[in-house]
Length: 65
Picture 1 (tube, rainbow, N blue to C red):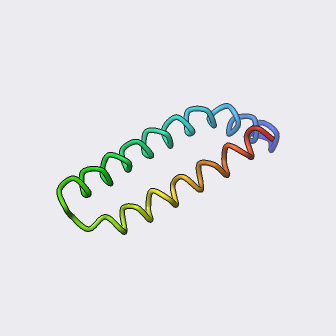
Picture 2 (spheres, rainbow, N blue to C red):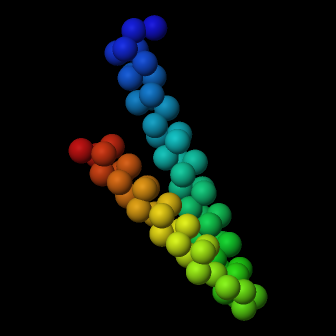
């Protein structure tokens, strides 16, 4: 497989990966909410969520140019 074909394959897979990332974000939001609701320490869960959101925003900027 040549370089261009590999790039095209990765670009074709990108929307599915973004959908998966969105599902992970929703899961992490649920985890944060559950921790807070149960009175558990949620600082690490918040940090992880913020990292996921930052990465997702960066990917969106790259994809939309």
